[in-house]
Amino acid sequence: MTKVWAVWVLAGVLMSEAVWAVGAGSPMAARSVGQAGATGKSDAASEQAANLADFERNLSLGQRLTASGGSDQEYDELQKLAEHGLKVARELAARSPAGAEAEYLLGSWLIYGYRIVVAEHTLLDEAGQSRVTRVKTVVQGLSDDPAEGLEALRRAAELAPQEAHYTIDYAAALHDTGNPLEAVGILLTAWSGKPQLSALEKMRVGLLLSDAYAAEERFPEARQWLYSTLLLNPDNAEIVSRLRMLDAVAPRMPPPAQDEGAAVQEFAPGGPPEQEAPGEFAPEDESEVWPEFSEEESAQPAPEAEQEGGQEPPLDQGESEGGGADERTLSPEPDEETEP
Image (cartoon, rainbow, N blue to C red):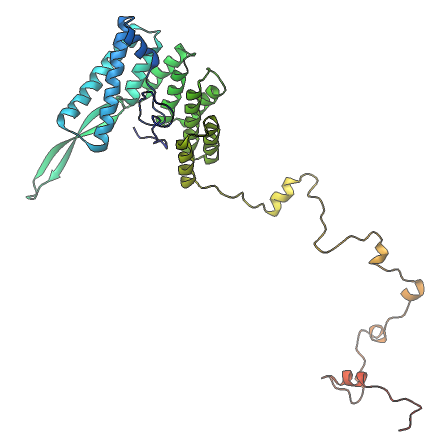
């Protein structure tokens, strides 16, 4: 199936133990199955351990064939592992209707198992004759509809709510099958401590939350969850690398400038506080700006030009419109006592 956003493998990021390394959202290897199978406590546990080993082989081979192809024998082996593994997983789930591990294995096979799909292609040769060729393609997911696999993983989480990895892997499968928002609700509950998480599991929840928000192009939330996860392990260089990758895909943008309407709305209902213009001041005494006039000064008659209708007085003789008035005005008047 096509992954949404998450393409990093958690094996080197979070843990040194074996994982089903097909992406950040892929389920981890079941702890209880391996332990029970190793000690030989029951036949059912031994069958589950064998089924888990087949599943891990199917994943490893399927990834390699997808990346670089392989021989016909390897393609045949992958298909046999898929058919046999799914059949055994269905039988285990039918015999243990209340067994969380059996449901978990069934859901994992249906969602993450690899199979071979043979497609026929019609080609034309050099002579113009049609020729049918059969091409083998590796496909992830043993069912075209993921609903059955998701339901099996949901039942596993419901049957064993104290086992955090069932809940986390169910949320991961929701994300991987195109339901990131539904996964977010489950992951947020898990982050809050329901169920109780180990440090490793909490880191995985944080990374899955980042992937889910990024799948919805909600990059600020995706970045914040990476930071929250980094706080759990500040020395984790891989998380820092993921932050850089996120910045490359969605660089941080400066906050948008507010227009006048937004500024007024921000201070509503009273409006923004009044601010003085630069270089100006509000005088304490209005008389400093608006001087008072006496009644006599205010009652002075208007100039003759204004009284007669606003017409300007005629120019004196020798005074020209081009500036003669300025010259006459600036020249000094002769002193009456001085003889000519």
